[in-house]
Length: 231
Image 1: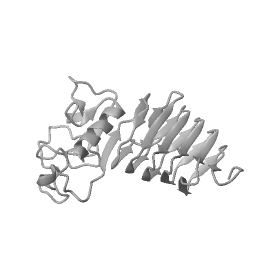
Image 2 (image 1 turned 60 degrees about the vertical axis):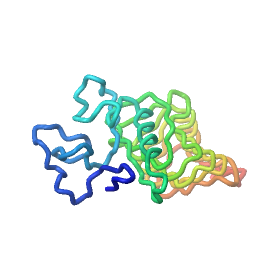
Image 3 (image 1 turned 90 degrees about the horizontal axis):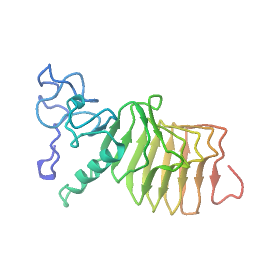
């Protein structure tokens, strides 16, 4: 795509796509057959599966390059890849960290220009263990999709003037607070399900706001810093 900026992905129309050895396993999200070359064309740039290990086949991916067994390691790899882009690059791409089905007991921090994507909210769960499960702090153009986040004090914390944060197709359940925006942070929240959280959505200061549309909310309270009463 752009050799000067170390972006070695093939174009969508490249003849190397799905033209690799048919006996090689295709990486997750990369079609039914492996590509020719080092970088696979697919929906995820980095893949997390808690069954991956240094000596495992890892679905044909390379351990600690694009295959990880913790979510934070995958996010850190995406962050480091973005840091290595040519500084003259005017448009920063969004990288995707995909998560295999399963339950992950982690607390994670998402960097700028990174999308965290589960394999479906019905099958991929992040358990916060009573802490803050996901943090966006001082970042932009990041998001979460297709995850269930549960058993957290705060499922998603957005602070430090973070902006262009996008949360879609997630399930938030059994958290103290599902989504909290503070410190002049902003986010878009669409097509999610909020159920049995003490507080569903909360913005704590006038400079923070959440655009929420097309969500399902049950047994939750939504709070606005500009209003003394729940919305």
